[in-house]
Length: 525
Image (spheres, rainbow, N blue to C red):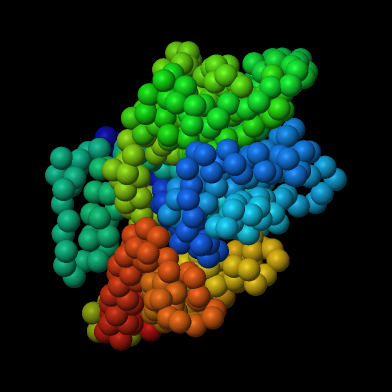
């Protein structure tokens, strides 16, 4: 390949990576955490007294709630409990009310009604993943990340072209030694190539997810001549429902689930949204896990059935009932969300997400090293350029600020349960405070010295999760009833403990580099 062609691709790869790299680090790191949103939500959940969570209990909850709050019949959501971590919860939005209401059965059988207590920590982490934590709103942030993902795809293509001439020689080479640039380049290339299919899927799907509103708006104006919304409503899942005001009882939940599972083998429901309860036209929009197949959403497969007799009304979002076109679209979604294959795929996506974050971090390090001005023999050490110093500080501040900020937001969610009115606002506040403080510290102290402090802070933030679990085992009022270690969340604490240990080892290595590194390096303090 001609040298000038390679230089062109290198320029494209370098600058698309630099422009998009830090935002993609945040998206990939938060995306890795979204693989275990349910365990994280359980870890951070408010204390609950373990109670029975059978289908009969869910029927009793619905009957009691609808008898006392008949307005909830129009539209309510039933979140099924598991009998260990959480009880059944029924949520609805009273007409004219600013907040939703939530009902559950207390251990003594009484109906407890109030505002929802469980903050959606999982939703916050997913929002950081979708928007890279940009404080500009979800819609605008998603559009920005759609554009960033397009740059990401260009970086992937140009990176493959650059490595192609030496692919066989360099694919599994990892030369550890005094030449740090060569070592980082080898690691960057190996991880990038071995996970290339994953990254291509992530890049292309993220472009569509990020820019789908822009694409739809263009289609509305150019293709559908203003008829798009009517066509969408006519083809949507609830269009299959036929209102019928005649009185009719809801099918007992156990029977409803059995009939659904007869039509969708392996389907395990966890959420039901029921409309027009008490009428013959009542329908249930059911979300559940079906790990054997490619699932349409990150929450699982979706089915619309009659809540009176269990008849399937809309199955386009569930395996075995969708058309060829919808099957291809669902595959597109499932490959991005990792909503197939169960726990092995989730763990695989978790480590691929962390490896992707490393890919963007190492890309910035390579940019810094490639612009390093080496000291000639016998001459005084040179001073690196301001751009190089700023890139080092920005990389350290953004990456470690994201890592520490998400850990602190998770811990804050546990400690503040029941003590603040708007826990979701505290999620954002804690994360952005840690993130901004890390960036300011990095630019004030410089990338080298700040990296040591910020790595120790990130390690401490990770260790705060298992320490919080230990606090729940102590007989103190603030932690009474937590006992997260007894509710199936030990995996969260184990991962946090290992992550903190890794960050601590990195902090020690960074401290040695600050003291004994090359005098002409931007990483020498």
